[in-house]
Amino acid sequence: MPLSMAAILVACGPKGNDTADAQAEDERPVVDIDVAHTRPVDLMRSYTANVEADNINNIAPSMSNRIRSITVDVGDHVSKGQILVTLDAANADQQRINLELTEREYNRAVELLNIGAGTQRQVDQLKAQLDAQRTQYENTMTNTVLRSPISGVVTARNYDPGDMSGQQPVLTVGQTTPVVKVVINVNESDLASIKTGMPVNVVFDAYEGETFDGRITRMAPALDVNTRTFPAEVTVANPQGRIRPGMFARVDINLGVRDNVVVPDRAVVKQNGSANKFVYTYSGGKVAYKKVELGQRIDDSYELLSGIEDGDTVVVSGQVRIADGIDVQLKKN
Image (tube, rainbow, N blue to C red; front, side):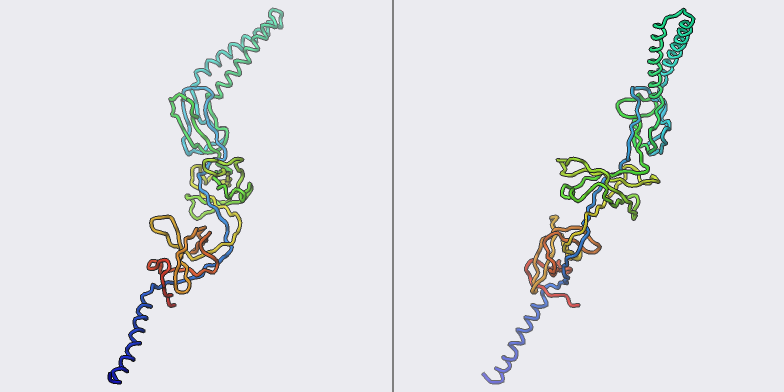
């Protein structure tokens, strides 16, 4: 082979290999990375429930009777002592007439006794009869005109005028000032951290952007074996009555501070077809698949409860084109 031809082959050979290597290098997926850090994280718990009145009264007569009128409806505010329901007074009228007759007979018997024409036994018998009829009449009157024992809001109405009252109360009145309550179900694992008197934040869908101060006022003495939770009562100040029974509430409780790994939210990927979450780590030009357990979202980051260690390098973009164990190249800034 002529010397000039050999020189050409030697010169061309290495150049062709360099081009192939460069092409292979360019075909690696491009990713962007960040570093996971451990930092103090507020240990927050959120519970949802509906608002309940602080005190509830069922308005009903002690015996069945026909309803003549109902002066309020659901959602109306009522005052303590306000007349809410009037029932048929026929029985009361008859009892009043009987009471007046007995009272006249008693007074006449007393007069006769005073002039020596009557007996003490007759007076005593009429006195006992008069007292019994008066008590019966007063009870009947109490159950003929039904008043609200508290100031509050009507939360239920089960009858209309003309109906006979039955087993259900005619009306239900809930006391919503100065406080209302929200009963949440506390996870068994959080029970040791939640105490009576602990302050909480409460938000309502009806008042977007507002946060209300609440306090845990009561803890159930026993665990609900079906849900593995403990009911806890949260009291929320409501001096103006803005918070109404039935509103949807979210109660946020700060259980303290813990140190946990935090990564940018862009690093977390959801596995298709499941609820699993994962993060790719980067080391030595390769990526590795790491299943993670999410804690709470913090602004544009996620707290991770497991799967990633402090100082791990994580992929924050380009995950669509990568898989566990493949070579990648870093995005040039």
